[in-house]
Amino acid sequence: MFKSIIKRLSDANPKKLVVVAGFMVAMAGAIGLGLSTKQLTSAASVRDGNRGNSIMNDGSIGCLTLSECVSDIKANKPGDLQTIYANRGLSPSEIDRFAKEAKPGKVYKDGRIVVDGQVVATNAWSMGREKFNGQREAFQINGKTYYKSPTTSSFAANSIDAFVLFDANGVVEFAMLTACGNPTWGTNEKPAYGCKALNKTAVSGKQNTFSFTTTLNPSKLVTVDKLVYNFGDGSKEVTTTNPSQAVTHEFTKASDVTVTVYYKAPGGKILTSKCATKVTVVNPFFACDIVLPRELNEAKTKFRFTVKTSQGNGATLKDADFTVDGSSTVTGVNTKDEAGNIYKEYDFAQDGKEHTVVVKVNFNIASGVQSKTCEAKITTGKTPMCTVPGKEMYPVGAPECAPDEKCVVPGKEHLPKDSPECVETPTELPHTGMGGVAGIFAGTSVLGAVAHRLFNNRRKS
Image 1 (cartoon, one colour):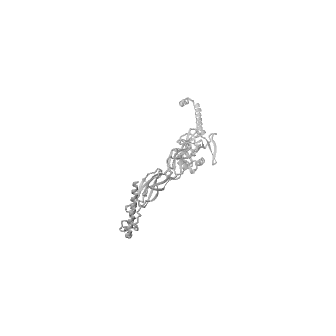
Image 2 (cartoon, rainbow, N blue to C red):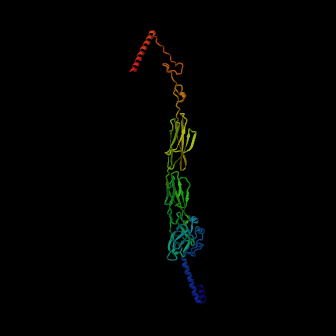
Image 3 (tube, one colour):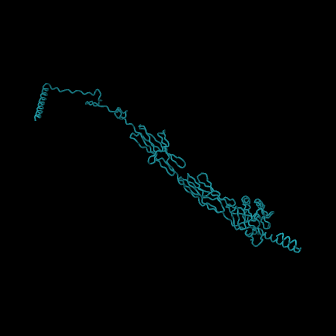
């Protein structure tokens, strides 16, 4: 097309050349005027060609880097630069923070302001120093008139680079187009972040042990950076990046549990939200209630010592250590009766002495082994001793304990049978004389005769 135009110009007469030249000048002016009504280019490295409309137009137009932008703002050239920026959200006291925290982004012709791939504002507008056409609205800052319009009408390019500053909540606080320094703003997207619930679930089979997850519902503007669980009992915090990942913890005391959720918001802001829940700890209990001794023989020398205990809430009976009279100890006794009570049997001498049996009962609990102690006292039976006077030193049943046989001679019963004094004295016959003897003999003869006759008569009959 350009070759054809050049050929025609070479063939034209001077009069035609004058006409063509005038036409080209008019076209150039029209094009320049059209471009001057727009805020140009999407590249931050290219400055806006319209010096009159640019807010930052002292020396060079716009700024290529953040440091250059900050330098121009601090220099306040032109002289109303800081006043304009303060009106649109960047006060002089915030310039240093802008230098440290502003993020590169883009403002699109369709009204979107985008940072890190996230839409942080919509329905964008920008402002300049000149009206250009009826689409711009006039407004004043400190009595001076400026002009604003939506990007849908003011942008020639599809997008223009910008620097964007966010407040503590990740909401756009100030934005400026790099090509001209013109402020831009829109309907800000507000990051939705929070912690809906800290979920607590008891772990089956484990006393005072719980697992935790967190329920969140953030907006697309924020992403979860991490979650930090603090269990409120002095233990180490646990960090995770997944709110649905269960975090398990065993408690030894009642605690207030807190999870802090850290979100990444536009502009690199870290936003936090917290959820909390309470944990009530059920403490284990365990005790040695009593030691019951029971006699196993009549002599009271064999005993069984049975230990009665109570335990629960995670405490279980392990075993017991038995000590007799403070010296003889047997550890780890786990012999149990039908009721599940630990017992141990002992044989003692039949000496009638008192003996003490101390039992240390060991219990398993979550933190390890704990012990409780109780004791019992018994007195063994004595060997029965002889009650025969003078023989008390001999046991009952010993031959020496047999009582001595007594004298049966009347009047001498208090003497031992084998003593010399235990002798019977003969009895003396009465003095009857001869007549007496004859009488006795005669009487005896008569009785004998009578007896003989009776015997013979029985035979005959």
